[in-house]
Image (cartoon, rainbow, N blue to C red):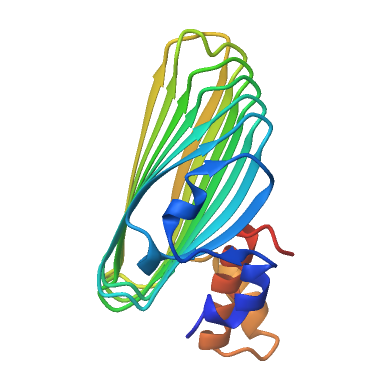
Length: 239
């Protein structure tokens, strides 16, 4: 079953392919980028005042990939980052989103499809250091066989980040008794005039959903394909 590769045209969406991460160390204009995980390891990106960065990072069929990303957002800047991974034996990604400017917006989403003994570790830190900043993290995983996913999410809001809003969610679907999902949220709030939320779900796909699809002639592999594609496309915000 292929999830990501079946939708590459939608995923690319006119984004430029980056061969070297040094090309995007400083963002000052609206920018849309697509980066294969093999082209990046450790990098820092500063999104300047009023600038927008729309970036997708892809890891497919890799034995081992480790990525460390740091985004620093200036005043009224916007970050949209999507991380997609499928069939990776070991995928370890760490993202630090630092909102240093007022009205900065950070939106980070991830999708991981694991089978056999695939493994993913996703560590995300949302740091609010300015008033009226907003951050959102959505992580979705589909796990089969003996695959495993670890999610570590941290929200930090400083004393001077009044009126900030931060959300974080981690949703895991297990298709096998041998699959595992670990979810660890962590909040550090130093200002009472903020809005924060976090949540995690772990479990099998809803039985009514599977019954509905199979009652219309779909076999089990087709049902699983549609569920996984729906999760991935929702991360990409594609209907």
